[in-house]
Every structure is written in C-alpha cells, then in structure tokens.
Length: 101
Image (tube, rainbow, N blue to C red; front, top):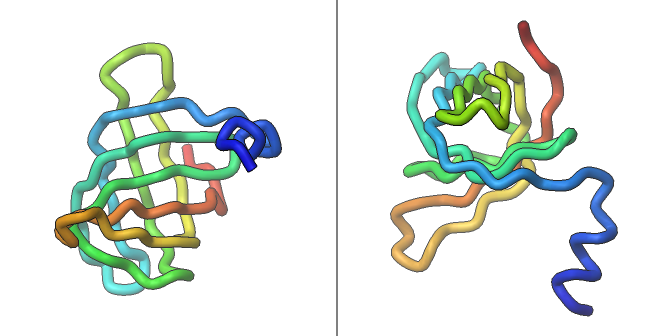
C-alpha cells in the first residue's frame, strides 16, 4: 500500500509543525519540553528525549511561531513511541483527549 493511500484514509489532515511543546506528565507532575512535529484534529506528534509508556497522560501547550496555527493547550494520551536511529529521541504519537482553554 502506498504512503499516499494510508494518508488518504486518515480522518483529519495533519499540519506539519516544528515548535516547542511544553509538557507536564499528569501522573508524576514532571515538566519537560519537546518539539511538536505535526497536529491533526485528533492527535499530536511530539519528538521527546524520553520514552513514555502508552497510556501516559500529558498536559501539553504549544505556541507556534507563525499565526497559521493557533496556540494549543490540551491533555493528550500517548498511543505509540518510536525511537530514532540514535535512540536518543522518541517520536511520540498522542491522541487528544481534552482541549483546554
């Protein structure tokens, strides 16, 4: 199956980002910063320096540098984690569970 076929089956178009994501682990209270890589109506992809377990809940705030994307404050749930080639960064797929104001 071609990559284009997979993307066409998504419910929401993904918008590419590259901006800081300020995260708080809702279980431990630990705060850390990652990079927001893409955003859709249902999910957010983060690049982090730590691996989080599926099911972890994060309070995330992003403020993109351009006005094309509005600031976001949401609670997200980790659904998948993929290490990069170095094993030092983790592409973290999350599902948006609650939009905050």
